[in-house]
Length: 329
Image (cartoon, rainbow, N blue to C red; front, side, top):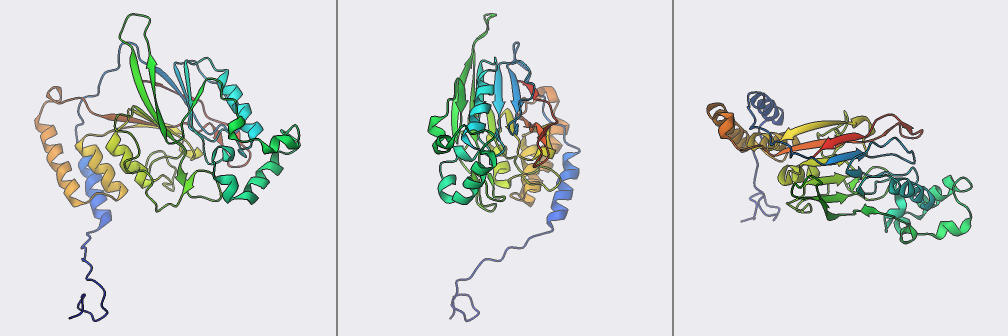
């Protein structure tokens, strides 16, 4: 007898019965509107002031004072050596105790494989800045190894843990930051991956306090076309960092907050497409119990604040439009 009962010798594939995704999302959104989230955790007596910027594209916008300066990529327009070095010099001169930077898809020099895989695009970038920023042909041979980083901490799919002492005698605080330049494929740019490829699952350390990525997760300040990555959104819902900073989608500039309790995580999964009707049942149970229990009896919620810190507007003639975002951690 044929393996699949149809005479073609192929193995039998299980049939999945899928109910309307639109109906599932509608029920989830309606149910979430009745949910009473747990109380928020209070800020420490002396919070850390985090300054968030992204997508400066060669501009030097005003940067407010603070303890920690984060740049979420696209330092430059073309990604050549003199452009990147100019931005590093500007960032190094800022007075913040720590300065943490990742690359973006425009920062071609920082992608070790880009010049090998896309020599034509690299030559186009060199030609664009030749005569305006290069002092001579010798500069075209410079690589990322020749960059002077000053006191900047550069993250490329890596983490760093920073210590913040307090002058008032309070215990010092440590903050763990994970940074990645990866974004879904769009055109020929640096640090990109196919849109249907999951590069995020189990990559972000569980104890991450601040997550910096160049691109947004799906559904979070990612523009009207929802250009964010669903795989990244699923990983963020699992890790639940206190703060996530990104850019890339200039029109998505802003700040929003999500409570990742049972209801929040299930709702995100349903909207993102990786959770189904069982998650809706969990939402219903949690919503009912939340209505019964007093908020004071419930533990503080895991809250993640999302910041799209894109500074400039436009795609060719970059102009500073937005201000740096200040966040108290």
